Image (cartoon, rainbow, N blue to C red; front, side):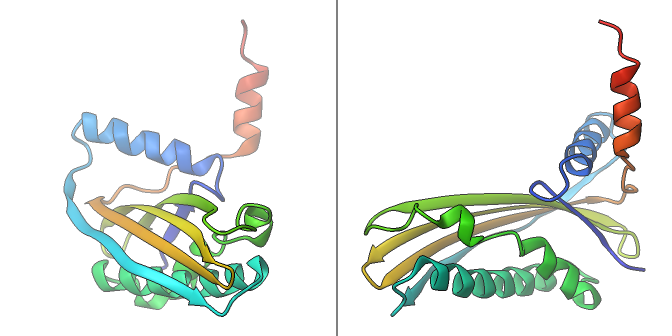
Length: 176
């Protein structure tokens, strides 16, 4: 059975709805916190001999995506078959257009984050992942990336369906 992933950067309706459902279910004791699985910080990743921001974003995106995918697959059971979905969730990171103009000079930095909910019905869990990174131009031809990720596990609940049409209809029926 495949996993479902909703992220804070790619699912503007589904992620907040499911996160709110998780918080409400925790308060009502319908979902149980199963523990902090991983509090992970990678040593600084250095990209030397890289002068252009474009080249840095391509290298960093690939390296960080693989590192985070490997880490999640190591701590969450049953994700090996769905490595492609995990990688795809991290694809939005290190977008050149978001970095353009931010790392042109030495000591400039750019931070970014992403949160995701991973629904694994076969494994009977939902994982909440928080990822943060800070990229620093540490030299004319060098960039450093500081990465941190936490992963918390909860008992399984089904992905809460959201539909733009349902939201739009609710807004149209709203009387102020």
